[in-house]
Image 1 (tube, rainbow, N blue to C red):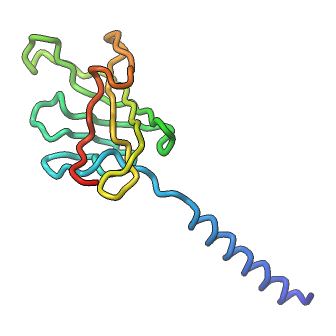
Image 2 (tube, rainbow, N blue to C red):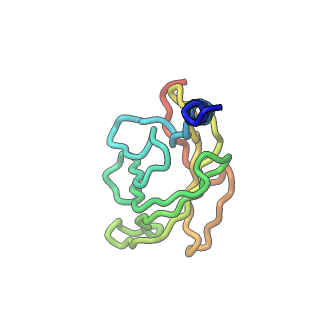
Length: 142
């Protein structure tokens, strides 16, 4: 084979290999569905900020970092505002929270984590699937 033909064959092989690899990749799941009412982070893959749509700081998670996004469970670390039971929001303080996104399903036609739990290890909390620290992720469509 001539050098020009070898170069062309290598170039065509590279293009075909790249097309096959990108076409086979599954889209990244998103976190629930975009609820559309003062929320942030929902309906997006591995969000760095999650706001539940409330004005209280206890519903805001910042500096979220995820690992294993796309696996059956994704694990996150975030900064959140903890208010001791029976205290005013002003008595709260910043804590490091752990997040677990799980139960992969479909939300608004997208592959999505449909549940998320948040807990604070420094307060003795641990992750338990479907426990009191488990939050439903908003999804208003199939």
